[in-house]
Amino acid sequence: MRFVGPSDGPVVICMNGGVARAVPGDWSPSIEWLVGQLAPRFPEIGFAEVRYRIKSWRALDSLVADAHDAVGVVRARGASRLALLGFSAGGAASLVCAGQEGIREVIALAPWIPEQLELAQLDGARIRVIHGSLDGTRVGVLGVHPNHSRAGVARLRVAGADASHTVIRGGVHGIAIRPFGRIVRLPHARDWRELVSEELVRFAGDPPA
Image (cartoon, rainbow, N blue to C red):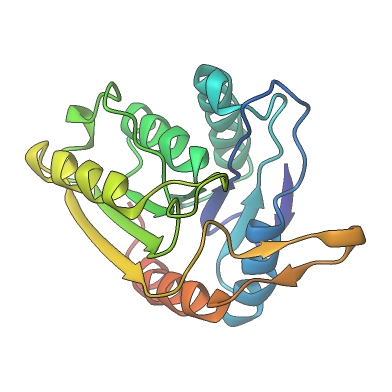
């Protein structure tokens, strides 16, 4: 895990997506680009980027375990409040971890929300889902269709969560890529940034729990 900003105030723990194979974790270009954009805007918020031990959506329990470990480290460093920001499979890991850790704020970007995920423990939590309209619509291109997360939001609402679903027209699965070691933003990256910023304005202004 790596930190940007203060660790003794409100902190956002950022969770990457995953691939099918069980491969070592790396730093997410989408998360890295977002943090680079958001940290200067919100100097009062700390951002903790998680690098999984094993980066595979087929090993969801491992992703959740890494999320729990990250929460423990961040709390030990003095965080006053926590939110989870999860991309793709990191959305599923964030929802599980938030429910088990009592965290009441999740921002899920193009999240995978499998039907077997237990959501009842998120009663009363604030869940903001943002998804690209073109995600998962091209044959042979991996992604998560926005209808999948829309169905997940419906289940979250039944469970009692304050859940919303926002679609970025023209958005794809991801915010940035790293060709040849350099981060390049994808189309509509700025739309993702602005929508996440709206949530962080509220999160930064909340009183300590």
